[in-house]
Length: 374
Image (cartoon, rainbow, N blue to C red; front, side, top):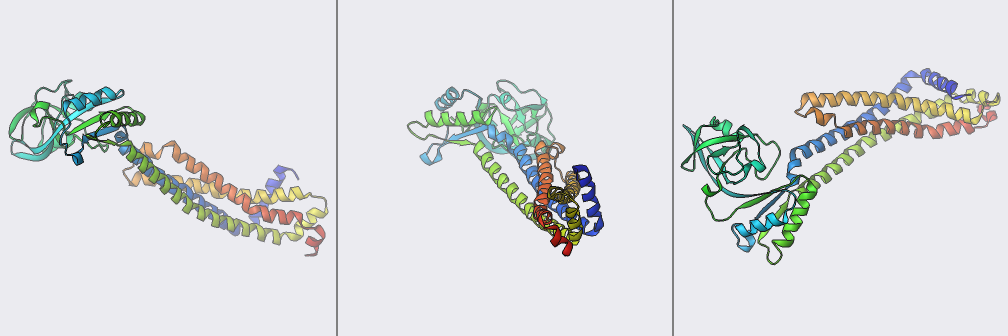
């Protein structure tokens, strides 16, 4: 019995009891949907979180060591930080708070004193100077709240400034968010030192290297600054989402295991019902291998039908996720999501074949005389 006829025979055998075969395939479908959909949903959360927080992995925040009684970072320390930071831009900041007014409107805002805003921020309107000497730069949310445009005058903590630029909104999380802030020339914000130094790098590895260099040099004799490497947050978040995805896929695997038991039951029942038929086939010379192959084809067909249906249903669920939530299309179409689909499809077929092994082996190895007598 060649493979192609064996495949047709397997299909015919499954069609003898279509309801039972359909229920077995449905079990595989449910298991595949559980694994693929839960895995993809977990992955969508992880990819979305990485996108929202990705920029912080390339930042290092240096602040005065308050525990040592240090209230600001002096010029000498900033120079030392710039010397050891070989990859990235060093942006010292003076920080304050106060009311920003335009006409009859007012809003509380963070006030940053910054010399080189052009190195880390982008203007949506106006132009950012390489050296900030005059005028105010307004964050996107603050500009919307006050109706501010380039050329308007705003009062910041009682002093009037002309708006020279409005910044593009920053959607990613960052400890130094300009959205609700106004940036003034460095000398316009009180204080002799700096409250923060931000190191903006191109990669997480560069940020890690810069943080280590600052710790080794600036804090060599005394811990004068606190160095916060934000990529460590991303590592913890990635670890959490990896654990979450594994947990969700494990839950789906339980469903697929139950479906495998259903396949095992269908194949055992099929072998019992066709015991005399198998005995006749063996008596007329059909080999054990051919019987075994036919039974395994039956299990594989159930797996293919169920897994294919599971992939289609999962695709519809993911499409519904995109339509019903604010998830961006590129996150849904991330290539790693396809791996969950392919993995669940392959696992569904594997479970089906493994579940059919014992019934197939039992049917193929029964003595023809015993099968005919039964």
